[in-house]
Amino acid sequence: MAKQFPELDDAQQKFIQDQHIFFVGTAAPDGRVNISPKGMDSLRVLGPNRVVWMNLTGSGNETAGHLLETNRMTLMWCSFTTRPLILRTYGTAHTLHVGDAGWEELADLFPDHRSARQIYDLQIDLVQTSCGYAVPFMEFQSDRDTMQKWVDGKSDEDIRSYWVERNSQTIDGKPTGVPK
Image (cartoon, rainbow, N blue to C red):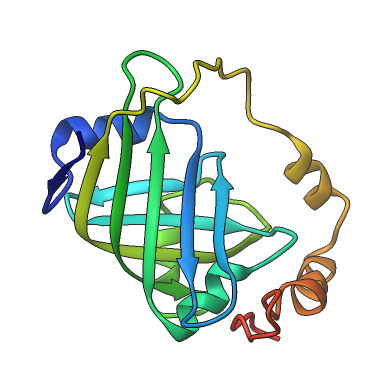
């Protein structure tokens, strides 16, 4: 049975910190809905109603494009170990890019990563838990090193060129706000 809360309690915050993967969901008023898995050391709970996460370079940039049109965001975690649990946070988010006010303060919360493309700041207005009975057991082995290897083979200029070429529009052709 799903339960709803106005904010994250201490146990829910601990649950989030223990997970190795989370999922982000966003949608513009029209076009495709996007759900993306995220990992690495890229998320921080800053309080009962605030979560920030650093978005690293990827093949797409749907979240940024959607947030330019509507600021709704859902984050989801599921337990693949111990007790079955799914936790979702719903709220409104805004995007920060390098050079924006607040970027440095939030970026300092994370390990330095040259492929950091955005930071998303989510203000939570609803937390929901559900059973997760059908979520399988899986064992964490390690984070992938693929992103780091990709970055190591690129200059900063190469990474920014990639953003302009591959990350400046959503799959629906809408702008993402990537600085050019």
